Image (cartoon, rainbow, N blue to C red; front, side):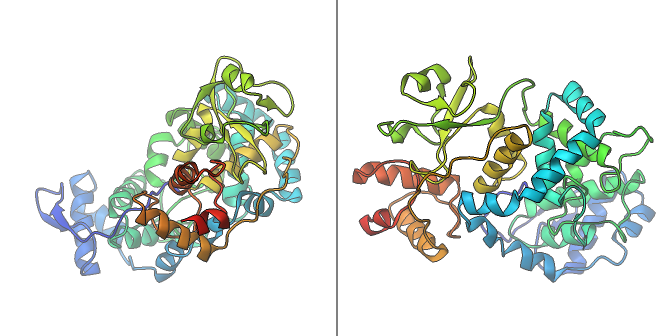
Length: 393
């Protein structure tokens, strides 16, 4: 689970909660930084012996920093990204897992109201159903990212949460491995989320997100409910949109009642639009590509991962696992290259739009800026960047 928004580089020092002692917030001497973490861990209840044992042998992991700065996969357009991560083999394996863990998934839906397709989709995308959980030392990864000054306010609390997991016997700092950003287990949860939502799904008295699929599925579902998931409500469905739709109303920034969308000619590709709910028409590759109605539960998924293309793919994967057909690709305009996207982001920024980092990724902020400029230039405002828009700017 990758819940980390991007923040600008900062280099600050502040008073830590550890008895008012001055502690580095990030950067500087790594050893001095670790000493500050030890004091803070003790202030939160660890004994001196426990704090020393938890941080014994901790080191910076340069592989973590390299991985943090190289997330080029999210530059892929939706159809390419989804095609890569939702293979036929993964669909078949997901269907088999849903049968094998039927009782657990029944409990997931009964206790937490999370549709089984959703939690199984994340299980599949995060770790290929537990097969690849990461080989980074979790403690070292978290301390490395907390020391790095890109997102210290996210990762420092995760270090302390891992220390609390160690204190209660659920974390081995020398042996615990996971993803480069410190996520643990089969659905990749951060330590704070495990503290809040860790659930014993197999009844053995322990929460083991690495070794127990039942524990992982129940814990992930509990977390989604805590993030705002509503039981019994859909998250996403494919729709057919009319050629004369007001494209400026599409995108996540506009929510309308489904009957209003129906009056504008939007139809479900199969079945019917969900009555009594508001939704947004999502065009991940523009008006000529696939189209989806997304509901409030879809927005909850952004608390799991901030990437637009990842969340859209995960939501779509969940619908496939629950029986939806493969989406209609249509004939979208060609995707821009990563360098073209960066050039576009630079031009959008120059016009006063907040697109976040200039990274070549078509995220939510960039899509909103694209749509605004399309409207200004009299182009179809479907939030899909084209070379015509780039040239127009």
